[in-house]
Image 1 (cartoon, rainbow, N blue to C red):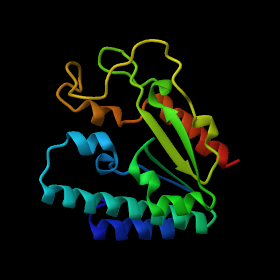
Image 2 (cartoon, one colour):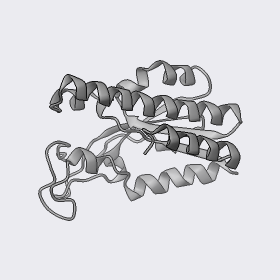
Image 3 (spheres, rainbow, N blue to C red):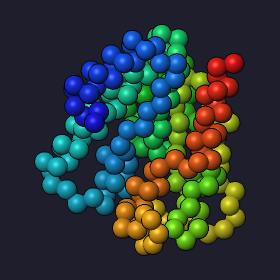
Length: 185
């Protein structure tokens, strides 16, 4: 749980001492996306708590990425393409150094709903390594499912589609792993 200072301190210590070659981060995005902010029913106090948690995750992630860059190691983060986190000062400072943003549509990596319809969930990776091979745009040519509501059948039945769609597909993981291995050459 990266929302606790003790867990962050432990992770920071592990990263520093282990000299992790590449660190990849993906923190909760609900606070940073318009859809999450418009459709979630929360009180003012709940939104403030969500904001504090979200900013804490983002700031710690940026801190880890800066450390990786300073030490000559690699780092990356993933968020929805239009998430507000990409416009926050921490990311823009990284982008002004050696980090770039790479965009993709999840359907290009095989993301589908429970009926087999592709889901065009727009994502982005930010990294100080060239991840241009991860930039893929939709070329499905068929109607897409919607990332809203809950899954109606199968092993994920009852879960929020947005939660399920936030999981990386096997094709995405394989392509990303190839990039990590390529960076070691």
